[in-house]
Structure formats: C-alpha cells, structure tokens
Amino acid sequence: MKKLRFAAVALCAAAVAISAPASNAKADAVADFYKDKTVTIYVSVAPGGLYSTFGQLLSKYFGNHIPGHPNVIVKHMTGAGGIRANNYVYNAAPKDGTAVLTPVSGLTKTVALKSANTKYDPRKYHWLGGWGEAVTDCTVWKTAPATTIEGARQKEIIIGAFSKSSTTYQRPALLNTLLGTKIKIVIGYKGGSKVRLAMEKGEVQGFCGQFAGWKTRKPEWLKAGKLAHLVQFASKRSADMPNTRLFSEFATTDEEREIYTFFQSGVEDRAMLVPPGVPADRVAALEKAYMATLRDPEFVAAAKKIKFDIDPISSSDIRKFVDSTMEMKPATIAKLRKALGLNK
Image (cartoon, rainbow, N blue to C red; front, side, top):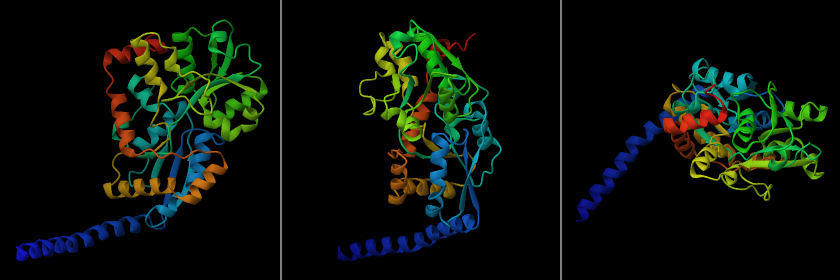
C-alpha cells in the first residue's frame, strides 16, 4: 500500500514538474509580447463623460498588472451612440491583444433588437469583466414643467440623447410609448457631459443616463437638490434614489413586466472587452490584469476620490447575461421593437 502511495505522489510530482515549464513558457511569451507595446483603450463617447473618465483612470493602473507592463493610452472614437467604436474594435482593430474597448450601455440590446447598423456579435467578444452594474435614471431639473412620470403625462419635457440607437434615446422613448409621457427627445449629443452642458444652457431639461454621471460630474447639483428623478433602471432601487420607482414597478401585466425588465438591467454596461481572434493566453492575461486592477487598493482609492463605486462583475456573469439577451424569443423581440417604434 505504501508503495502505491509513494508511486502516486511521485507521479503527481512528475506531472507538476512537466507542466510548470509549459505554464511559465506561456507567461513568458505573453510578457515578451507586451513588453514595449502600447495597449489602446477605445472609449466610444466623447471626453469628459463617465466612460471617458473611467478609461483615463484605468489607463494609469492597467499596465501595472499586464505581463510585460505595456504603455496604456486612451482613444475616443465617437459616433452612432457607441456603435462606430464597437464596429471598429470588432472588425478593424488589431486582433493581437493591444486593442480593448469600454462600450457604452445597452449595445447588446441594440444588436438583439436589430435597431442599428451593427457589425459585431456580442457573444463573440472576449469579455474581461465589468466594474459594476450601471444604475440609469431619467432626471430633469426641479424647475422643469414636470418632475414626475405622472406630471410628464400631462406636460412636455425636453431630454437630450446621443442617437436613436442608444439607450439615452430608447429609454425616454419607451416612457412615451409605454407610460404615456410627453417627452421631446433631442438627439445628436456626443456624450453625457455634452447633455449636461446643454441643460445648463437651457437647450434641454434633462437626461436619461447613469446616475454615476451626476455623482462624478455634477455632485453640486445633487447636493443643492436641483434635480428630480422620474424613474430608475436597475436590478433594484439604488440607495442614492430609494424613493424613485424602478421602471418595472410601472408594469401592470406579465407581458409588460418582461418588456420593462429587458431594458431595466445592464450587467454588461460597464464592461471591458477585446475582439474575437485575440490569442487565448493574452485574453486570459488581460482578464486577470483587468480584475486585478479593479481590486488594486491604489486604483480603488483613486476611483473613490472621484466618486466611482467599484463593484467587480466577472466575465462569466457578463457572458451569461449577454447570451440570455441574444437568445430572446423572436416574439418577444417583436414586442420590444414595437414598443420602441422600430417596426415603422
């Protein structure tokens, strides 16, 4: 019996001895590749907004955790509510692990709904993980003609948005179609910071974007009580808006609840990804580096300083969400398209 145990231990030791060099060789190959390289983080909206700010912050720490410690830079590629950058990274950017993307919210839903000229399949991306669930709200000035959903059914309010393919347009459009609000949506803005500037100028009265945008870019508006939140989109009510109803809370039937819930959550909204075709060892290294960055005490402290809440989401959880979104039944998709007025 002792001989058998000894033989088993010896066999395991031999296996470790054989596999270790191979593993080290892979790690060395990744480090050799990234040494003296530049990794580009593509941000699909204009500078100054939530995603741009996160990308800039990430670039300062990400390279410290990637083997070979490459230089990391940020490039902004605006257009079509984030679709231009997605199409570029998926189809034209280098497939060697030097191009990563932080997309804007709702683009998986955009593909599922076939509501824009997208040239990518979210299921084929390599998802590295996310920095937290996005909480989106439709918010207006306290001085706007209406400051509640009930009021917006009676009086017109003007909200700024990126493009018709973005959730900044789709969410207020749904409020009009499903809840009977009278929201005038002005499109063409290149990011949340541009919409907030338009609010200051009096061009628009509100915005359907991430609540974090108010916390990080206009905390003085929140502190002064200048804003009214009509509705929020998330898996549960945010501690920042405990008295603001979730979109799904307005549903009166199971069919409505299914439609409302589809637009309510966005696990992948704050993700980082790389295009298909990147070698598996580099994808694994980037995923490990990204998640390590999100847990880096210095990074977390820097994020907290600018009021970014970091709550990492694994790549596997994001892939499950993306798969479920892309596998929606055709009949459900048809109802969603009708709700958005996409069948006209």
